[in-house]
Image 1 (tube, rainbow, N blue to C red):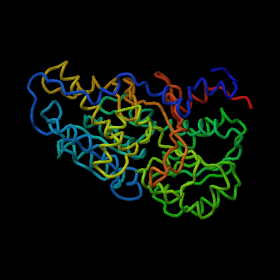
Image 2: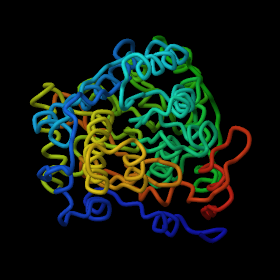
Image 3: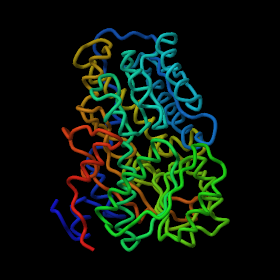
Image 4: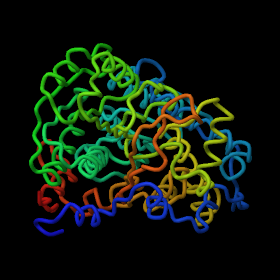
Length: 459
């Protein structure tokens, strides 16, 4: 990119698409859906019939459960599907051991160790909070425990905590994509905003959402300024002081990365102050919760992010059979619609199944962890959210980033993302490329890459 460009050229170079155009750009539809649904091939060699034990950790209690528990439901849906075919390679049925992430980081590390040493798990999955993976990642490497994190999205997992991962992988788009996607969507939708207030949870996710949003706005809306900051603790139930502080600053825009039940509490309290009538609103993860948790009273026309990952009405179910089948199966099984954690956990086990089958073809018999890892590195799969690729150098999963606008629909008893206003961005255009150096301090690779290489939009 050049040192200074027009906004139109900037968005064109990023590959941003909206609505129907997004479908063609982000979801090639020729032949791909066969990958998850294909028939199981006859395995090679002798396959043991002992259970394949998976430890799955997510939030089952507290305000975070409305976002996190669907991860377990997506995991179980996939496990039941695989087990109905006899299990992995037709013989090893998946046995799930669950753990509540609400126990806290230290307890979660101890539980991972217990699962490996006492329960003898073969694979560890799940995890929601970005505050947990930087502690769990090094522990998994120490235990030589094959791990596929569904979320726990912080860039710091692979930027700082585990620079050369071997046993750990991650499915969900990393956190920097959240702030970047939200900022790009804001700049293209409301380019005249100048005064910006923020409310973010006071830990790594919120701090980094704030940083990545601001570095993109510095490039795309260089006249914008932060006029208010609110930092509620994770699990806060009363957002009054943060809401009134933001209103008092008279911003053009409020940005928030508050998530789960905390977000539901915040938006309902904000309604009492008419906050959404006084400013525009952008969220990184508002609609990340289980879809039914968002009421019809939610403000319409706001940018309601889904962690840059997946929402059940995109890719369009009439054009992407994998999503259509997944949503139907999930709805039939759980009597609710899936969120991005559901899709991530489901795709995690389907990726495992695909990988084990490929490794079996190469090695014969049941593949050991090294054979599985060799096939996970650089793996690609078609899932309900579209195409997912695991980069071999950092074990991070990449799929095109998405967000959208809230709207009431007569088809659902809750608000949804407007299917005609879905925004997608090719993930390669908003994340640091392979080989970009790990930064010092609290910055991420993506932050320094944007700061050093992105042009500034001409006002």
